Length: 306
Image 1: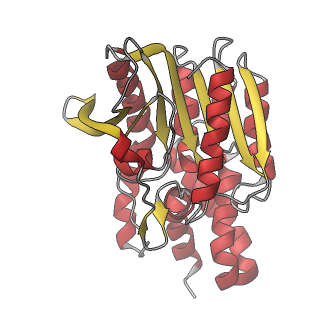
Image 2: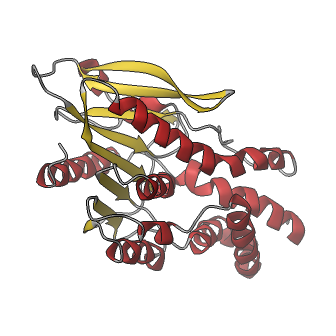
């Protein structure tokens, strides 16, 4: 059994990456990447997204190969787990005349944690949030300059770990008209604690509870990410929000999802929430993802965003 101090240190790393790697399964399948065949109907465009004088992110834009003449496309920016942006976009199978965009995160999370070697990733993990927010802002600017993109119909989608990024970017930029949050959360410390407990209780028993409490607080404090529920309150009247929760979510505590929803309700935005009778997105959640996309399409149509 690991020593308590080692559990806390590993917990900081685990708390930082657990949702992103193991549970943000818009990307990972059990033995590789979930793959769909939707991209044969679309054109992929790669381009740099500059976030500093010396650093670019790898941006990807996916547009239909056949676009109706004179049409300016709405755009959906998608952020989920840590993986190549093209694979993330390929998860979205839609016949809508819509552009899809994303970028590779400025950090590649390890699949396994080993003490103490994994601690070297801490500085990169801490820089992930501010770099990603700058990246989203820059990506929005790039897309709005394109002649085939409608700058008034920009929507962000944040799934699981990607939700805090999407909420923050929409809060900071009132020109972003739509925000979709799938299995998102407030109460970051409580959420990380729950994720750690799922992993630690079978191995550590009762001692997992105090260790997870400490590690989750230290991890969230180290990351220095603003509370998503506080950022949600900053949304404006010209913005629309669609929040999708899982009724049987075993990773996101109900109170964490409700806290984020309360933040949206206390904002000026037009807000809608729906719950699906599912667990959190898991490896092989293809059918659930397809149903989520259909619900998003209907919501975007109703809000004039597609």
